[in-house]
View 1 (cartoon, one colour):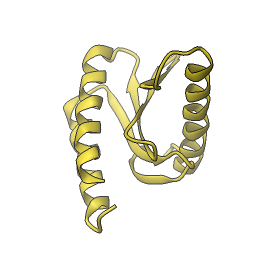
View 2 (view 1 turned 30 degrees about the horizontal axis):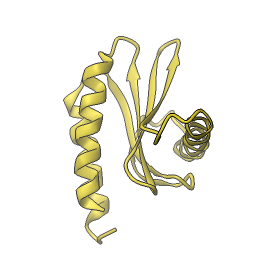
View 3 (view 1 turned 180 degrees about the vertical axis):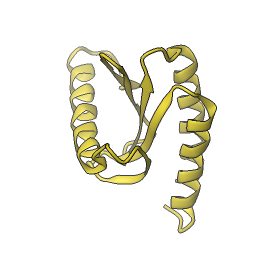
View 4 (view 1 turned 135 degrees about the horizontal axis):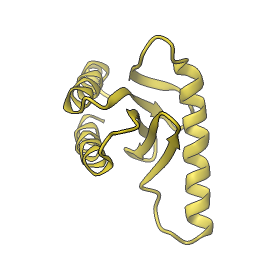
Length: 123
């Protein structure tokens, strides 16, 4: 990554959060489980989320490979109070967002895809 990338990545996350009132948190994570940049509420354990997200992404890749479903696009988790979506940026990075239960998923997926395209240009 370029030297200015952390600030630019943070700007992409900020813009993504501004694009939807339903988004609560956003992060760019390494598939190794480390956080690159994140905007999360203080009650969320960022390191724990990063490590678990990496594990979920790995499982998603293994399942899609085992079921011959092609390259993994996203991992979607539905909780009682919202959604967590992991979307691949490249072989090294993943975008993670948390959204409210009422979030319009089609619009959210589109906003995430736009953010991923911006991130790809930065790295």
